[in-house]
Length: 382
Image (cartoon, rainbow, N blue to C red):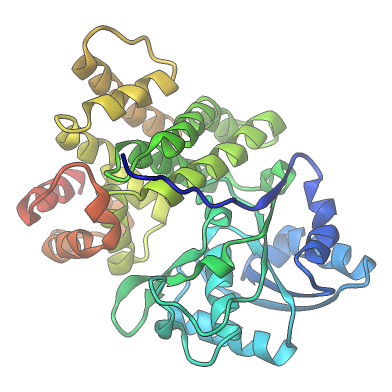
């Protein structure tokens, strides 16, 4: 039996108004200065203003980089790191969705070292550890506050790369459901499906282990039971709280187990079209599950149990029920769209399939797929 080593994860503050503890979090990571990394729309929501006011009232000197776009690029990282270097030693406070949190990790590692983003593949050991990160997620989907790598678009290579290091795994995560209340229904649905896919793919991953299974199962239970409510009534704080905790647990799961082909396909679709990540995932999710059920019967049966479905003595029947339930939930929250609506055309299919199979996450998928099989999934989803 091999030894399973689990590294301690971040300190978590979870609950309504948890963001009020932000100054304390900055103190706890050893700084009285904060370099805030966020996306281009966060100021308009009022959340950025609240964050800056909290830091200012505590006497914490701040600078702010607001240049993160929905699919952050290596250029984003390099620009943000240059500003962080000019500001000097500080905690990095990442505020926003997965894109902002992922970009913050890249900025934190590049700013602490010489070089550019492409030098810091997550498998490389940097000369110096990255700046410490406090994560303040404002969506419930990516679970990016749980790990030390970011999915970044390499503008030169036209592909997704994984930039980061264990030193930029956020040391403090503030999970405040009130910060997600203003998220519109379509974004709530897309990010929520992302969290659900994290749980499902983690359960079925070749790297699954008892700890990741525990996290993933609870994540699926929380997300599947709360997503429709959060979409239909965005002010339901209980549903929002269950979603943000489910997202966090799914992030912990995937950090231990890895993901699979659904994410490989979605990354490739986004590279080709700029599509919303959660929608790209959902477009192919049930189709990939259906073609994987012969190998992933038992994990998919766990999905059925976590979703509260009545199970039987027949694992294959239960797995099929889970696939139907996942599809039905996606359609209920209007997140299962044809790939054509995400900008994919038939001519892109071979290239997207190659990109999906070449993505590092796809190696964890429980079943091996050939290029023609992935093309068939994409064609069916058009």
